[in-house]
Image 1 (cartoon, rainbow, N blue to C red):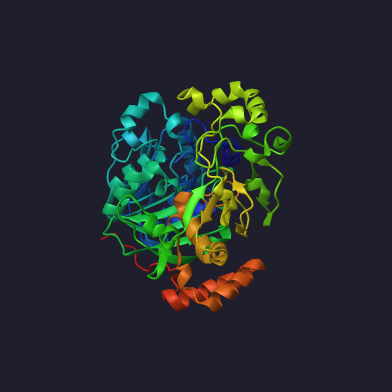
Image 2: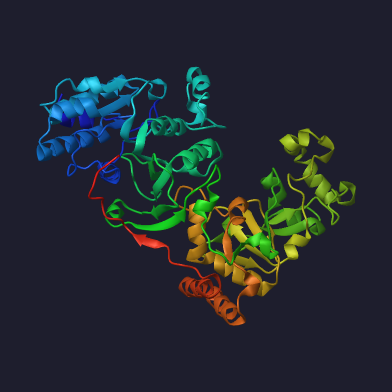
Length: 529
């Protein structure tokens, strides 16, 4: 079979084994990062690829080994059989991989011997100097039932783990002392619940040397929502810091600027992704309160532009949602929220509001079907969340959960937020405007990008769990002069001016230091001693 034919027949969908092929540029970068380069003597460097597919990594590995053998005059065949190992669960893909190797390297003998058809997680393997690859992504609900019980015996299997978590655990366990491990894989394990035990394992037993976030990069040969990152991990005592970078395109591999983050400890890596200096504080420590808008369980019934004609106006609150805050503009869509609660937080008596009673009873069947109501049918017209009508009249920052806005909005007491809006209250109008401006700054956006999982489109999420972790200057301690300047920039939507003010605040009051470091030169010595 010709090489072109093989390439034409590639299956780029994930399929039953969760396979997505890696772009050659990413493969080469990863091999450079672990030091597997032809300019080094690779004759005794052992390397494993645990899910080789049709050979994206393996062909580059063998090519570098061949070039190294020519440079350092060692036996290419012998080095291949002694040092290069691969595993793959799909026998058809192994056939393709072997055929590609035979075509590219006809001098190699018995290439199949080093590529095992197996479930890598259940196989037995020798320790190696390097493990590289792109492990399969198979969500908990898609893991075959017959395998799930076995996989759950892995120490890092937790909650609804994706199978790639186990690939990390198994591959790290194969590293020799000072060995290097580098995957291109989803970054979700570093933040999500199911990655808890893997984070603990890595933090306590290994050193994370680099994390390169690639959410905005097409790292694979098929467009997939993989949220990829490259992680370089070494089997040695952990470093005090981790080199971290975001890249937006493949070409960025040529000149990466890293930021130094503190090495993580334990299962919570918030301290790594949210590094900060003395003099900063979380929002709620400053007397502000973070909340989320009302969830009704039946928005089409409780929220509408037509409610003024159907129910008593006393029960209506102008409501604002994420769609009203887009394109860096606040434009109310004219919707009202039917509030079934009195000022003391109790459900209103419907007999006192005949129009509302008639309207709600016309939708009673749908309202009763909500899960929460089944437990207490007498509260059939209650919303999922209780309501505090005074929230509407309070000055508050409004933050859509998922938003491409650069601007952060302050409502001066005109609207009640929906459940897709997070809000911040507290302080006075000037303090909230200063806080809103700081939330617009690159300083905060970088923190948010490091803390949150991005949605398709690259948007970070304004969620209470992340807002509560942001570190910001103490608003009340900012000088009047700087407060006035930052508020003017806020009113003019001048983000550059805001960034300059925030930099000045950090410089004056937080003694912030520039942590950016240029890409490190490649090591001149290759050693796992």
